[in-house]
Length: 351
Ligand code: DP6
Image (cartoon, rainbow, N blue to C red; front, side, top):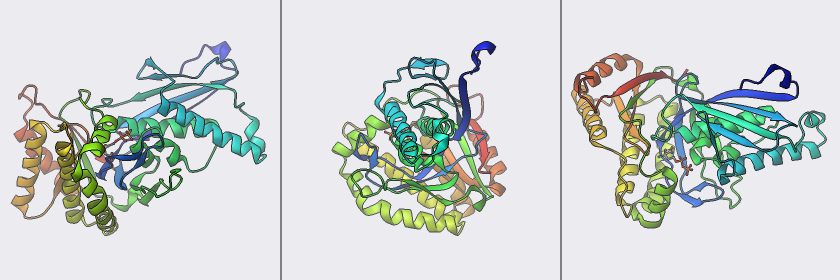
């Protein structure tokens, strides 16, 4: 935020960045809409800070008359319930710290209003986890500005469920929790980003358009109408979480990749089982799926794995030795001249 020089005296501001996370065991469905409590646990990989990320600046001043927020340069309504939840919960932590007579707590008054400015360096709401990075970044930046600590993932979760996982780097699980107040619905790092140095993430941007059905509305309809989703949450995900954690701990790519693809496929199957059905994949997505299976079949092992969130864009997990060959294969089958179907891609390391 650029401030005129003579007015900066009483303004304090902090800027932070937070990366996107891509789930390998998907979260889809809430048991509590307000607190954002999921019907199943989930697990994701947080991408590198410098790649797909949100950058947020929060400024605080006694002269600000109201809380305000700008997203990608455009002012948005600060009264959205999820934004209000995050602000309220962070201020509650400030109040708690004050009551514990922490001397640092008086630096900023609780009555001070904040101005929030947030940007993504990737398409917003195109199924690339923009809300995850955005809310994780907002909560973390507020916590730095107001010097509060505590279980911040439960606050980020109340902005957007998947945001709680972006509060940590590397491999992160979100425990669904059992409590009605959501205090045990927290994110936890399974392994740090340095655990698996050869792992690579290839983002294939099929479309940068906004998704037709947002995750929030989509998963609610799935909860209301899909019996497959109920089966998935109760009978599939608990065992899959354990298997996935073991595969990550052992750096067993073959198991990791297979579970990732199966979980993505089951998530999209629940979308199809939703009534009316939700279609996130398009023809290009399905061609990418076919290509990955042909590639793996050729080598008789799982060398690359795809996953798709609430949009047609593919995220490919693979290992460093296979990246350049697989990128060549993608370029061959999706040459730049196929207008309208061009794939943009970006290779991402975890650390
Ligand atoms: C398909 O976290 O965006 O990306 O909690 O309603 O904000 P809300 O939903 P959101 O859903 C993400 C769904 C997903 C799977 C995942 O990231 O686990």
